Image (cartoon, rainbow, N blue to C red):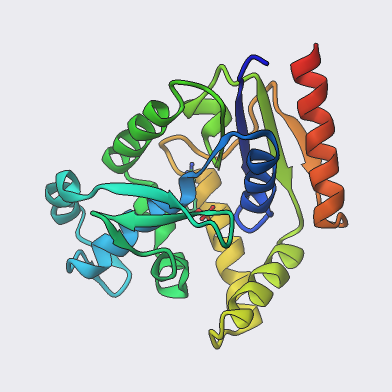
Length: 229
Ligand code: DC
């Protein structure tokens, strides 16, 4: 069957990566979590003294960009690709609140986006890819054959994030997470470069009250509909 490109966009903690990863595994496609790439750049910036508190030294990060190489390796246990910076495993470190609370600042910088988008487009050159993010259907793959825009209420997304972090043993505060979710929504949809917005030809799914098997079944049905047309 002819391979296509699948773009899944939406706000943070909507369940995009769960959905994208499961579909990719089911249909034998590559799955790329583009948010992990912005998280990796943020972690690198933190580790290399580009932040003073929440204040980013943009020029320092600019000078370090050529040294940052983000890659993925499939983890057979989780079925997800793990993230590496310059071949060092960073999957756990990029998911902490320290990174989450600063990633929107880094993801709003034009030279960071230019570099990441170029890498994402190179990964998708052969098609057969499911990529999730904020600007995949609008900027990275505007010609994707299948575009999904996922939405869920901020409270439900904060609950999901809270569960995910506490299960990992992080001590977190629900109100802080909710605030972080809302703040990231605002920054992601109001930034100048490639803001989060729904592509005109995207299919919208509100999964606030759906289980994972229900959303996976919905996605598979859409995939079959599009590839059999
Ligand atoms: O999906 P996530 O929460 O892991 O994304 C982390 C951050 O990266 C989020 O604040 C939005 C940003 N991002 C982006 O700007 N463009 C993408 N394609 C993916 C993520």
